[in-house]
Image 1 (cartoon, rainbow, N blue to C red):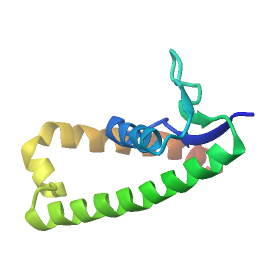
Image 2 (tube, helix red, strand yellow):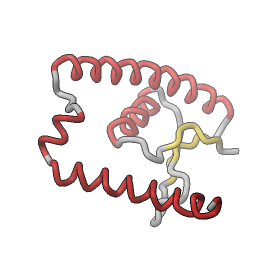
Image 3 (cartoon, rainbow, N blue to C red):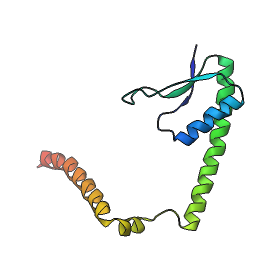
Image 4 (cartoon, rainbow, N blue to C red):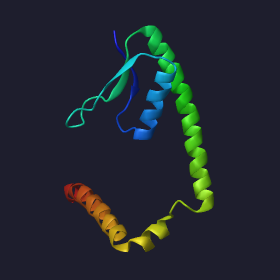
Length: 121
């Protein structure tokens, strides 16, 4: 019976390609399902046997450990080099969008709190 080895929902294309190539390189037999037309199904990589599942999960877990370490290191390097924008840099770059988002957040908070406030008065 088929087993789910790796979910592809909300996974960047580059990472999904790396997982596919990892499984192909290690000759793990797999197939994929898509999220469907409306994106509500499970996009995933599946394997057909228990032995393949154990091998695939071991490979994927090792890949994810190394990949997350690489991404954290890259982010730390970008932070140190000043390539990650700060809050104030975002504000200076597009003040109208920044203020609009904060007004929308405030509106949602007010609309969420008003019914509770009216209930107790």
